[in-house]
Length: 247
Image (cartoon, rainbow, N blue to C red; front, side, top):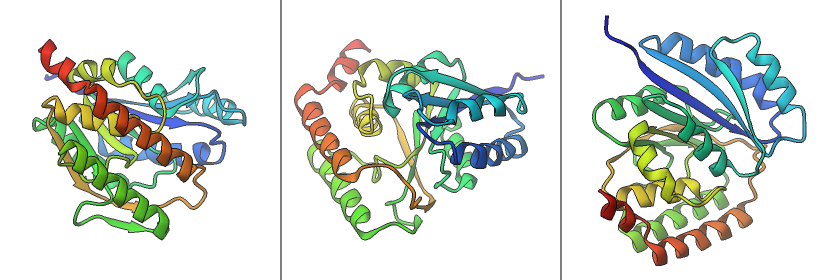
């Protein structure tokens, strides 16, 4: 009997005492019903750590779900949490999504299918033709489209949506890429994709259904400034050259 492929699904969280008990059981049930061909695990990655009841609630949930784990990374930053957890997992495929489950879970199988068929990274997109986005403010839409135009203009990349919180990567690709990804915050996604594509890794993008979370705590202006500084750093340092030279 062939051994099952392994999958780690990561939920990076910080002060999510409401979404964790509400959405983790939903995601767990979905994985249990739709990913029977994989040996999978679901990991709550607390980056901070959280100052509310997220740790207590998460630990309590792990008692009821066999393949659910809670990991506390004692440093702030979603990107840093993902990098640390991804580097330590041994699964064939590594995935993450936002704990508010804004991305429709029915598209998760497409991401993993892309990896099975040769892609190094698979990402959900709110901006690619065919995507459906509900509840997003005009300001966020304009800023997101403008930011991704900047990426394509300065780096000649092909993907449409660098920031969507719905991504998967093959373990071997992660191990080659992550040492060169410096950002520990929100720019992590963009840096991973820009560096990856410029270094020759294959990225596939699927248009998804996305329902914006009105309770999102992301500070748009602060995040946008961090993204601009990150793009400037990448344009100067060009880390993909180091990866190309190491092959």
